[in-house]
Length: 393
Image (cartoon, rainbow, N blue to C red; front, top):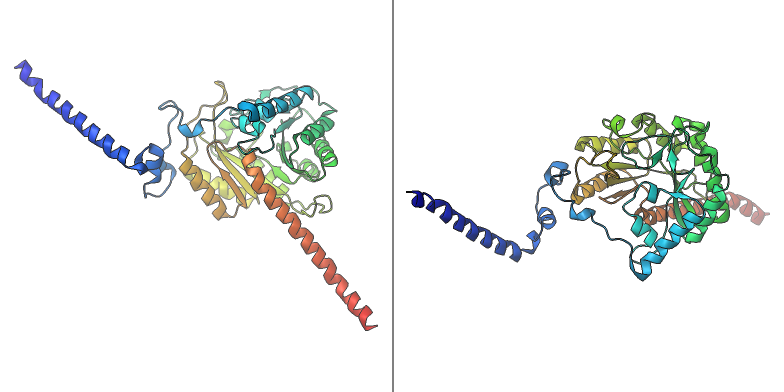
């Protein structure tokens, strides 16, 4: 009968409910499997892109590891407002705002431990002559002219922040004969003149691959020369502007890494510390990321960062996947094993992210101290024969 036909599903439903209830009780009693993240971390399988399992965009809610806190309260908000006001008064642009960086609250707010608040100043205005499909910076074929007062304004703004490590970046200016290299160099020199002990990192463009322009910026007093490769080679034409290509980026980094600097200007540092960055979530494959890391290391790059690409606006490229934090840990270990001196790898890591500044700062200071000690030892060694001769006489 019809009533009898309905019995098995009802019984099955009760059994299901009983099974689910028992499973929930067991799950609650086991702390290692209390949530998905801990469950994955508790497994013994080797970490890889496929084993971690990326979350596809649109299939699930934004993963929990991508949720951030806004700056608030009596400690963080005043610092945030102070930097914003300073940038507005001096009419300076920041990549933090123009590129919609998700870490702006932490950097401008000063972090949780009372660190100095800082911003990444974007030189030469807010309009770029290139149109990379991942970037939210405004694009223009004819940007406004350069501000001749920008070097002084930048030096003043950096001095007011009270930090000893600062990151500068720039828009591409293909409309200028030198791509803006002289202006960038002038800004760097102005900062060093006002703050001689400042460690300075500049995230710069490719200057159309011209070695003379790269050398002009690199020899202006920089401690860290950063130029981003952005993504793996196969997807570069779809991600970056047609004037920026994978191989040209490697050549720029290789040339900067090979430059010899005036140690008297650099406080004992004789070679540039070079740095690049890779975004995940643009359609790359595991082996392609590995090859990109190899290519950067072969080019002499000292430091690399890997972070999750996040779509800054609806007109920009969509996210293909959200990489799990365990995958980022895997890439950090592989990068260090390849010989990189430093690797920051995590969902919210960005090329100018403040978390990496402290480690790089310590590396630079150690290099300078070693160079100074070596120079002193060499001077002492050369003086010993003279001292010995004088003693004999």
